[in-house]
Length: 55
View 1 (cartoon, rainbow, N blue to C red):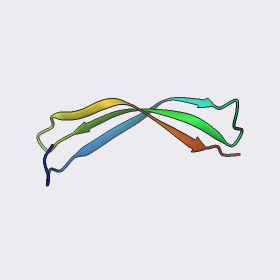
View 2: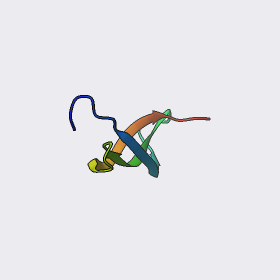
View 3: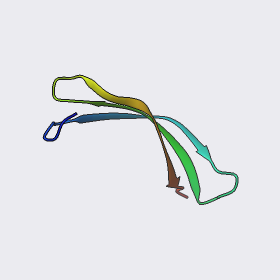
View 4: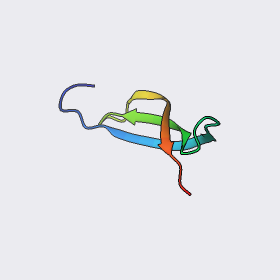
């Protein structure tokens, strides 16, 4: 990747899990792939977020 590159990001939710220690939050796992303008993959991996839970 270089300054000025246009990138695209695809994310898919691959998992969710409540926290036993926090009733107001859970874990979301996203399978992620980032590509540059030439369609080359510049990043791929799982990203994990702690997210507030909905009622």
